[in-house]
Amino acid sequence: MTHAALAFVDVDELLYAIKELSVAGRWDRATRLLASVTAEEPADRARLTRAAAEVALDRDWFAGTDTAAERIEAAEKEFPDGDWDTDFLRLRHTYARLLLVDGTLRIGPDGKDPEALAALLDRARELHAGAPDEVRRGWGAMYRGLITENHFADRTAAATHFTDALRAGEDGADGLLAREALRHLGDQDHDTGDHERAGERWRRATALGARAGTVPGTLSQQLLLAVLARDAGDEAGAVALAAEIVRWAETIGADRLAAQASAFLTGTDPTALPAATDTD
Image (cartoon, rainbow, N blue to C red):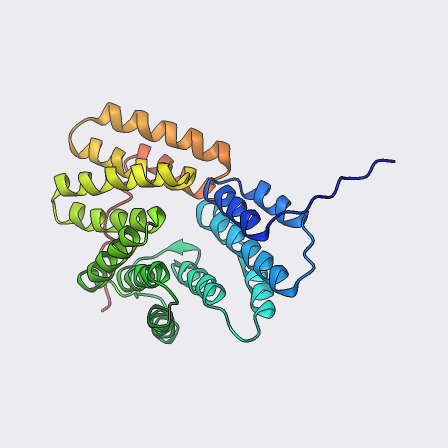
């Protein structure tokens, strides 16, 4: 009979490693690592439970799975007096859940519960105002922008929040936050016809994502560069890049991203604004 060797590790270093694995799209490895850990201190167990919820949420976003709800509930039980980071995970989960109407992505408020959307925006405001540091305030601003843009279709107000998030990401040296803000600011540039400015922002976002080690995030950003190639008339280049994105995304299990890139190959523009809904 063999026994696994035991080792003692610093919890902070362990959590950094798990975060990097999750950002890189190594969700199974991050989950197995968390499952292998035993923590004696209640505070450490709570942080590990919260980390498991974040890994599941990252997986759900890129892979289209549904694994985070139970883990977020478990994390909330570990923090009965409240915890900003856990509350932010709940906000992210609710934001993503409300994007789907009858299983289909829907931008804007049509077909969604107005009370649920209002509650989501109110919660985002609270988390933004109560954030304990500059970077978290930046993430609060980022999600205020995402909610305002994708659930309320107010792109002008959203741009202000994205700009605040970009400033916080740059000042607080959070490359992932700066990448996310640049991605959405570039999308607005693209939709207004300023493809040069969009390209500048999207290329910078791609570099920031690569530096931070986000494999699925960098692939999703490269899909936007494929959009620019198609806009510029380089269909062969756009198709070649999108085909590689499909191959990479399928390999790492980012099925939702692979589906988006596959749709691009058939002519779908992932940046296109939704058609107006007839409300008569």
